[in-house]
Length: 421
Image 1: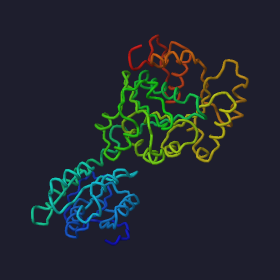
Image 2: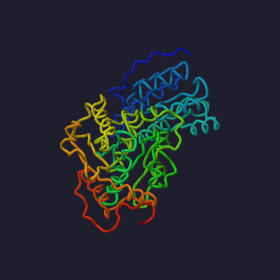
Image 3: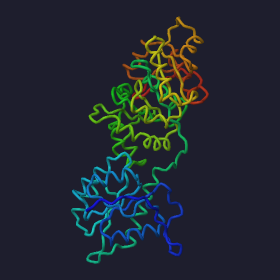
Image 4: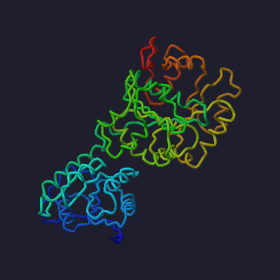
C-alpha cells in the first residue's frame, strides 16, 4: 500500500443532515480515521458527521506501522479509528506501540469479521472499543458505531477538569546535590495536608536518585513511571489504585527504583500528567532533583512556583546563581521563582542584604540547621513537628509558600506519618 500524504481537514455535517451530536462534546476530541476498506470507512465517516465529531484526517493510509505512528504523533488525535484489515503487521503490536506514544489516542478497532480471538487480543493490547459488520452484510450497525463513539467520547471527558479548575503545582529543585530540596518538599507536603487540611500529592520526579519513597516509607506499590505508562487510560479510579497514601492522608508517588529507559521520553509526558493532577489536588508538590534536568525543562511551563534551594556554602550559591540566570529560567518570572537558603548557621559570615545582592534575587526564606533532629526523625520514621525550631520554621515556610495563614503552634506533631508518633 502506498503511503498517503496527509492533509488535515475537518469533516462537517451537511447543513440539512440530522445530527446525533451530544450538546457537550469536548473540543479536544479530534479524530483520525485509518480504515483501508472504503465501504467501512464511508459508514464510519457518516456516523462521525451525524455526531459532529471533528475529524482531522478522514482517510489516513499508511504503508507501514512506522508511517501510521508518525502520522498519529504529528496529528495528535484524541481518537483513532483503526481498521485491522489491511493493517501491515500484527494489530496487537501496532496497538502496543500506539499506547507508548507521548500523546496516545484512544483506539476504536474496526474489523470486517467478528473473530473472537482477534477481539480478545485487540482489547488486551489496549483498544477501547471493537466494532464489526453484522454477519455477511458488510454493514456496520449504526447504533453500535454511535454507542462506541459515545463511550470513547465520555472517556475523553475524564481528562477535562471536573473537581477543580486550578490546583497549584509547586516544584522543588536543589542548586546542587545535598542542598535539601527533598526535605523541604516532604515537609511542605506534610504541613499542607495535615495542618492546613489540603488535598496534596507529593511526586518524586528525581528519576536519577529519588528518595522520597525511602524517607516516607510510602506504602505505594507503583511509581511515577507506572502512572506515565498508563496515562492514555488514566481516570480517578485507576489513579487511586496506583497512588500510595500515608496514614496522615498524604498521597505519595515515588520515583522508579530502576529506570532503564531514558528520562527524556517520560518527562515529555509530564505536562499532561500534571493537568490531570491539577484537577484532583489542591497542591501538587514535585521533587525535581538538582540542577537543570530534562524533567525540569519539560515541566517548567506547567509550574506555578519553582523553589530553588541552596545552602550558604559558596559552591551552592554559585550553582544557584548560575541556574537562576540560565536561559530556561531567565524568562520564568521573578515572582514565580522562590530562592531558599537552607541550613543557615546562626552566625553567618554574610548578612542577608549582602547575600541577596550577591545572588541578584530576593531570598524568599532562610531556614536553620538542625541535622541531628532531622536524622532522628527520619530514623523513626516521621517528619519534624512544631515541637522544635526547625519544624516550626518549616511549617511557616510551607504556609507562606502556599499563601496560607500559618497554623497556631500546638504540642502535637502534625507532621507524623506511617505510624503514630
